[in-house]
Image (tube, rainbow, N blue to C red; front, top):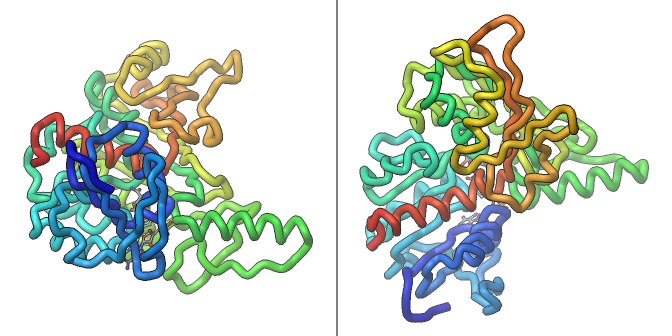
Length: 349
Ligand code: NAP
Ligand code: 3JM
């Protein structure tokens, strides 16, 4: 697809769960695109995908496919990014990478525009998009950090299957149907495609997302811990995470406990602070049973916050419930938002 004004944009992993939302978001935001290259593995090369009513043919992602590309949005897994993002940079592109491949690499900005947009100035061609669970949490934490200072964060997640890709969504749906029909099921994907064992996700809760590390935490939990410190420039922040997969199609929920530096804040003050913060919608009215839920976050770019309570034992302790569409603010929207920031800051040539 080509027209006169805008940038040559490549979407790597265009046929995937994130890639599809990336295209929808680029279309909705009317991002300035002069040429669009849709890239995937050999399996999908030749298929067509609709963008702004036009059929675009998907090509295999190769180093040569990045000739002339100015902006490349990667969401095709870490190994694809490790192999192809440097090839895209070599050819003059800026890459916004949705995988964990470069997030903790020094010199690679890890950006959530509501929190650390200015870090984009220091890029060397690759900008990392954080993990979905990290993004929605730091959007909620940043206004609290600015106002009260932050000492400690303890988070438990309730994550949707769409975060594990299209195959995981299909596995949950098929399993649910089979179980309701009294059939046996053979889990093949969740909790992690590449691990030794697989467990039923339908009607279940699995306390494993990504592979276990030597310290007993999973990689998803370590992503939340390390990425939060990097994005907020707070290596001293105490962070602990427990990540759980639920049979929810889309929308990650998080129970977040924080301890602030300054004590004495009231729930009302925190509500009004968050209600006026960028990227946040406050949904917190227990008397009317108003609180955020996965289903009501679907299709929205915002981070929803509710259930704000003061800890019963600590004056500087607060509990929050944070929900967002994991494929939008957690992935596609944050990436396109980074691209819009690059344009605004005149960093995209
Ligand atoms: P998905 O639904 O399984 O889609 C995977 C996409 O990658 C497809 O377009 C697939 O193309 C493409 N792909 C696979 N192997 C490839 C290869 N060797 N070369 C080129 N393209 C290849 O997965 P998803 O949920 O969209 O996630 C994709 C990646 O995005 C994940 O692996 C992860 O790293 C990242 N992600 C990040 C977040 C976040 O928190 N920011 C959230 C979710 C995912 P085919 O159609 O040809 O198979
Ligand atoms: C979300 O490389 C892979 O197999 C992708 C694993 C993955 C990641 C990751 O580590 O990049 C699946 C789902 C993520 C993520 O965003 O951290």
